[in-house]
Image (tube, rainbow, N blue to C red; front, top):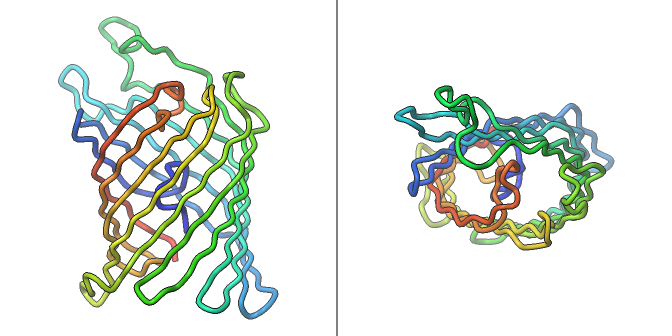
Length: 254
């Protein structure tokens, strides 16, 4: 399953920012190509990842203008070893990330970009290894993880090539019971990134919400979000932001 609070994961959904009415729109998919098991309690999968997220803004009376876009494509291999109400999970993925200004940030009247910022040729091609430990407990599930990543190519050149992630996810289906015979999970997830953009600093994203459906299956998620750190949109990577949002996503895995 994609990491719940990481913005660089395949998902479908919308995050609304009440402070300015902007939207972060996610469109993406991660699809398994094949899977193989070496023993009864393990599974190895190979998958492709295609996803993007866009910033929808309002300008000059026009709503839902797509202004900035981050695109990702690549693939990953994942391994799961299950035993004693516990999963050991490993994922290695190779991803190309590029960022762009698009027409929602272009002012036809002035024949120029809106605001003071100008497009940056942003590229980050990276490999990332994530290791997670997932426990199935009486109240629900607990997963904690860490990862290390290295970018073989970056633009601009001031970006540091190494970066690190760590986080946790905890959920319980014992609090709200069931809706339409499906479990309702209360969950909290935290994702933290230590990256040099251009100086090494910590960015953190915490979400609190409910999921209608099996925790590791398909379902609808409604959540509150708080993010503090380097801007999620890579055209603005050098800016530090504090953002509160309300959103939903659709889990289509499982």
